[in-house]
Image (tube, rainbow, N blue to C red; front, side, top):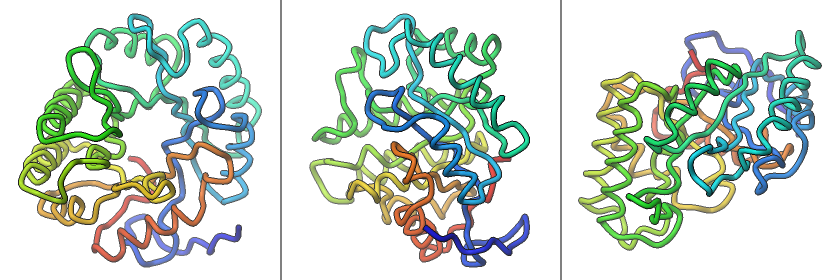
Length: 266
């Protein structure tokens, strides 16, 4: 995989070379639905010429049974990640982070992970919603589920805990209708909240990779009505996906819509 040489400056717009200089959404085998060791992702990021790589496994939960990384496995994971950060120091900036759900009962745990363990980058990726987390945003859904998703995403963003919003439009996947007034309403509420709080939104390459309904052209066309910051992230679940054809397609997606994408997370 050969990357085009980066030539644009700090404030460049899309279309002037490669947009991605970093990836802030990365999963490894520790999340149990990715493959590959932490070091393999770092080596691939270095090979691709990235300046930064955030490892953002799904956050382990203390108070909820369902967790991609069981809480009892967190010490081993943390040790492995710390070792990798130390090993590659000076070669690439590795950021410790987590992709998190907004679950109010877990917010103190998230603060503990930030303050006591150095997980500086927490991103919001809402996969389950509802009082009992009964709504799977990737399953078939109707207007009610769409609006609950928007409610919880906006509530989560209001906490100030999360640096950016991952796959904001993932809820459109398997929605029962095509783009309709309910979609517009839900996405407007999310984009308005991101604009007001100055929280970047992600154009997610894994949706392209998985032939899903996101990133949604209609949603991101709507997003242009707001003053938003954007990131392209791979959402890699295998080392070869750190920067691949799906990422290049995400760059082209942004270019076609006239969306300016940040090279790095500020």
